[in-house]
Image 1 (cartoon, helix red, strand yellow):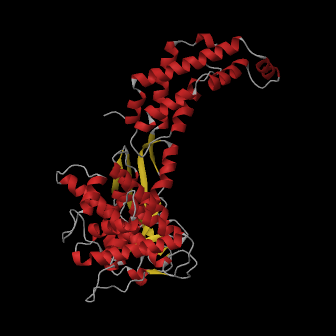
Image 2: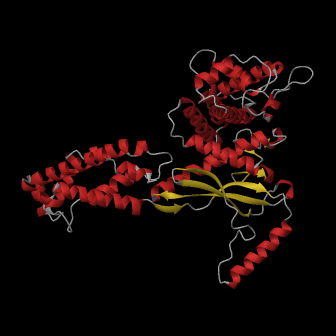
Image 3: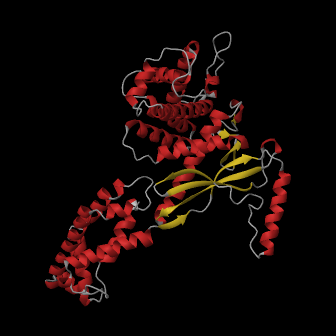
Length: 470
């Protein structure tokens, strides 16, 4: 199977469109060269360049060269799968650098023929295939810290063997010595690129849960891509994976409520399960974390035009922004917005409708639905007060609960969609999802949805009420 990008560039109609535009630019430049105006002659007399260079520049600017960029954008970039393996900027700049005249070829505009245009385009395809696109991999980036649950003795023995071997062969001893070199785990692969996880070195001395050792979980990106695309992915992907880890940890960890503390009510929420800006998780949760990473990457880079997939992608983007937002009120609002992106629609009584749908999706016990409704409505009220500048004592607790609730809603929508598709019910749509939630009065876990610890936020005791922080 050929490369998707090369196949798009080889499309006959696209190729002819680009070559025709280049010939137009060359023709316009030739006219200017044969009939230079006063400004062009003065430019040459001042020694600022040759006449044919100035003619080419003006021909490119005024000879509909923008059609080339539009064609690359419409017929190549927009038809590529996400994430993009190269950029529009690279495609266009490389093309014009190749076809412009220089001392080596086509210094006489009238010498440029249709065959020359075709030959230049073939050279351009080779440039893209063999130079711009190339096997590249990113630098390792930190995703999270993992609490070491196994005894360190065996790791120490392995570290000694690795160090001794490196020393004997005159190689630098890696700082991750002690980890297996073949322990990479692929969590995502698409469009000729993949994201791999690898266990890194032990974390630097500092606060450690229960005094246990921590090691870094690292990620890196491999694929046939351009330099600029690789650089962009190095910036985009780490926050996605970190947000996935935080969501997983909220939904899978036991006793989550005490995991947050407030050092100062005027500073952002402090996540006790974070060290140096990285979340930490128990070693037994790393497999769950990789599942969430795959789901979030699939959502973020979806190329689907289906409405539900776009909703899921928007929710992931909002949670990334929520996690990185220093302002508690805005962070709270972003998490609520993520829930609205999944379960909301235009209309009145947004808070009530959203609360009812959250209850139908996440609370299987009909007797607890009222508690769910009240909890979500109170949370929505805290969001409104905080966002409108009113200082509320529950703002920080509300931010935590909203983030937790958004993680549960997102995971539930994804798992329900995937379950229905695997079961032969076809592709999920927002209309179908919301219709099912609006008419869901039966007791029992919703189709395809896992039961999460999120229910502890509103579950009642014998009195049917919960001592909520909200």
